[in-house]
Amino acid sequence: MKNSFRPAIVLFVALAVITGVIYPVVVTAVGRAAFSDKASGSFIERNGKLVGSELIGQQFDAPQYFWGRLSATSPNPYNAQSSSGSNLGPTNPALADEVKGRISALHDADPANTMPIPVDLVTSSGSGLDPEISPAAAAYQAARVAKARGIPVDQVNELIAQNTTGRQFGVFGEARVNVLTMNIALDDLKPAK
Image 1: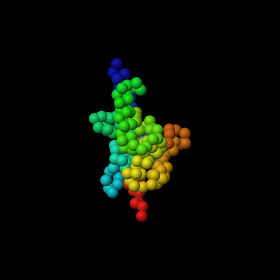
Image 2: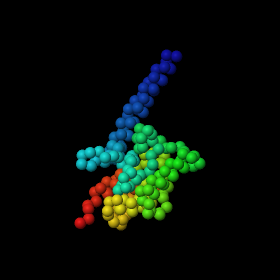
Image 3: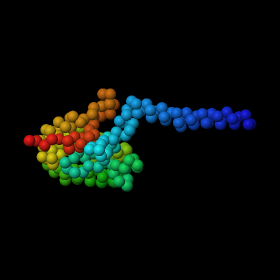
Image 4: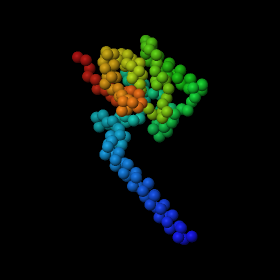
């Protein structure tokens, strides 16, 4: 019996060292070497101040900014410590109320807009932290943002085109616009002379 404990303990220790120490160190080193910005959190700094991450959505509700997807995290929106979807089904009255509230907010912010509202502007993402919206969702908001900033809508549409990321490797996912980087690009616009 004593002879069977020793190999089991040696194997346990060896596997613990391999999977608990060596593997994480190697994966972290490869990640930092190959994808240094993503492995470090894709943080964005402006004037020496951290303003956010490209990977985690944040709340924008001023008319001069693009708005992202709704966040289902609690107790605060875009709380990275409690990432989760709402898990509300399509027939759930709470989901219908959430969608109606967002539609109302979008109409209140831009009453002249008669375009169909893209679904990603009225529903939350699976993680509740989605930092991106569809190009259609950005286009829906372009007139409101242009009016609030006092710039031509064509200039905002050009900025949307410049900040649209295509499908991954040309086939995976959908085209998307990162809300934080888009809003930073808006803030960087030089006023017309």
